[in-house]
Amino acid sequence: MTDNQSIRLQFKLDRSYIAIYHEDREVGFCTPEFADLIVEALNENEQLDEENETINKALQMACRELLKRSGGKPNQVKQLMRKYLQKAKPFKYGSRAIAYLLWDRQKQLDVSNHEFIRFCDSYKLSPQELLDIYKGKEVTDSQLRAVSRIVGKSFNELVYTRDGFSNNQMNKLAGILGTSSQELAELFE
Image (cartoon, rainbow, N blue to C red; front, side, top):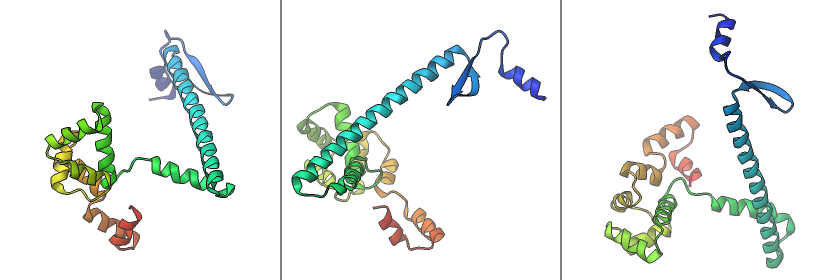
């Protein structure tokens, strides 16, 4: 196929096209419908950037004020911000990740704490077990089966969420990196 043939396949002569510019350079062409979608996406992205900048400034102000009240040093603001941002990220693995799934399920159901405790108890996850999971204690397989029914995920998905890498995967990765699987596991905690 020649270059002219590929161009004819991509462009329909009966359609109109709009040039797309990025940083004052022409980067391509698209139909007016796609141009509208691109503009909408870029506007949403710009709005998200502005909101993120505002939230970042608010966090910085709050950390500065907290350090001022607690007698901390002003040069610790970025360190404190990183600490809070890290805490705000949902856990991907471990008991805390299971707790997050349960918390998220409660939000989806839009029920009170008391109602959610009863809901979980009806799926054979006792109030004490639920509390232990929220405290970050180890989640057993039997608890995981109940959580599976509560959050609507398969048991195997939750095992992976709880355990992260399987032992076999961890051993292989440790071998590749030339370290022990125990040292590697500590990195992921």
